[in-house]
Length: 431
Image (cartoon, rainbow, N blue to C red; front, side, top):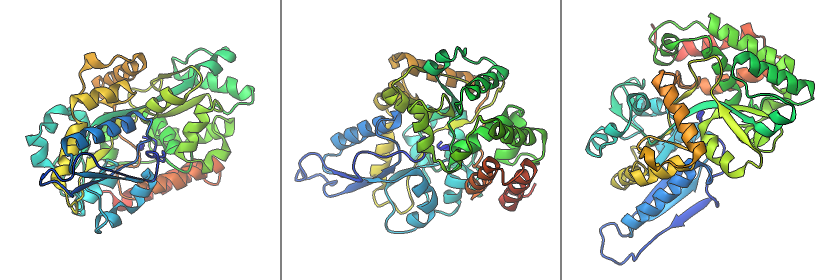
């Protein structure tokens, strides 16, 4: 979350340097592409699986298009989230960019006419054949901007899901076994609190906090509940058993010290770093952290799926979209195609990402194999439940501000759920 969004790390530092302008080859080779440029935006950390894969894709693109300059601009997740509608409606629009998927983001931009219809390209280049049905859900949007059917407006070339990351060294130090059940997870957190350690890495200023709460709700929900909430296939009651349990349990976790009250202002980057630095023994977040943890963690760590729940947050990854104002759409399509190639997909898988079109036999890293196996387990049980901020425009900001109030104690669970109901009903299609 981003998500998210990000699901990815939403606020990760991009490639070294704020602006990368590169060209390759002899610009005087007479090619019709000479003098053209591909303006690219993405917000993946350079040592993340996606960041490393996209860097390699840029090299491949330059080799195939020697007369083209590649312009990469440093953009953060939050920056794009807030400014995309304005920027894409101006002359500053990039040719291709990474963007958050879902009704409230890519769906909204497609409805506003700001994204290029990629349907013909998806069929001609075979992207539609490479993506499974569950991953493809976030690629297509109808005229109302609702995902799941309609035209192609984005291409996810990786998948993602949430899991529990845990510091094996800290668990061993306090003689805590890996939790296999929800009760064992809470018992582990109790032990850490007894030793003066806040167990959960959390960030109230961005997506992490709301994803904890949504996962608690999912542990009491089923597919029909998810479809009603995300796809408008039924009435949504924020005072039902699942949402009520989630809000009350989250507030209780703050009172018990599982979640620090000082985490209210922490962003996603600070959340991940608190785990990386060994300050928090547990982080519930997404596979977008996996490659970075492999690269930076100085301790032994592992992962497991949220115990006691068939559902968890997850979907196809963020989308490559081509703004309607792109000046070099064919080049944009070529770049997307490269990221979908087996070479780049295999690299992505071995660097800690979840590829959508890799050769399974080419994935040799043990931790990466576990990551992909767990994703396949979720997919086989139809366990991907998308993200809480997706259903309606502006809901991400509502979830951030209201969940912050639960952390500070300035709002009770009942009032929190009232606020979510009001914001959801305001913009959701009438049933």
